[in-house]
Length: 115
Image (cartoon, rainbow, N blue to C red; front, side, top):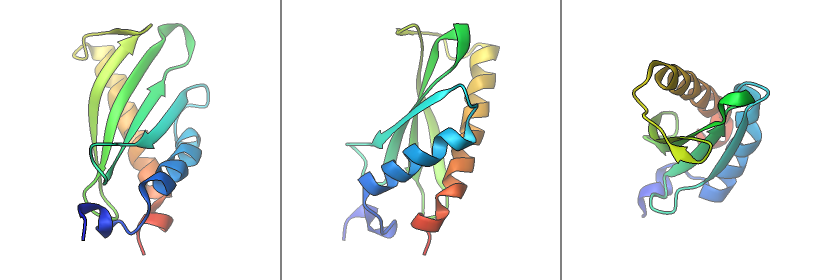
């Protein structure tokens, strides 16, 4: 039995569910991309592109601790394709906000992850 078996759902199916659900939990103008984490069968990768002139993109790793709980880790922040300092107040504030939205999405897809 592999590590991902506790989820009981195919990683691509999970990524698809997240891809269709996450846009409903983030700001309407923001865009999200979701795909399976190739290095971790119980994790997804999420990129959120902020709307407007800021042109930030936030990369997160969303790992399933179990069928209900996710661990959200900020991997990288870019502005117009360039890495930026993640410790600034605005970045920290946005990252915290997006983490909250990602947790909301995890709650929303629980119907398929938790049996």
